[in-house]
Image (cartoon, rainbow, N blue to C red; front, side, top):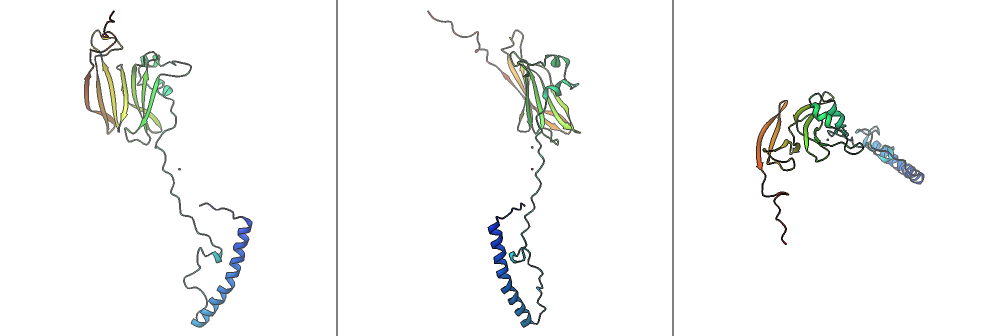
Length: 221
């Protein structure tokens, strides 16, 4: 996931001095008489009155604690990060091309996953045509640089941050399944432990075969 002194207007400053001078004379007279009656020296035993308007002192503003450093990184060039990563497969790098102009098929999420000095990055690389996930990666800030601490390159795959956990969804195809209609999915939840992600649990979901473009009823005449 960063006091002030102002200048009073001239009329106010002059009025402050006039009142101060008028108050100072009676105050000095009273103080002198009190000292003589008590046999004292006339000095105030408790020291000068800090913040006394007559003395011309001003109150010291309270100290403002420094703002806590932000853990949220600035904008990261995810495309450059993936291309320079030796752990990313050559196939994913070859397919990482702009879809339109300079827009790349890359999703980036920031969040707390590893407890590092900065928020972690979750990067998903997709295809342009049908947005199929071909690679999911987690980058952790270490020694001033982002290090790849997780990768999944079995498409279709997509990684997300869910309440401090890494959740990876992998679609499952059976023989004969078209790309647009997988038979199900595996959802795997990982948690950071020591220096790596450890699988916590997984669930499997089977998609219904009763829905889809091929099962719509035939039109009636």
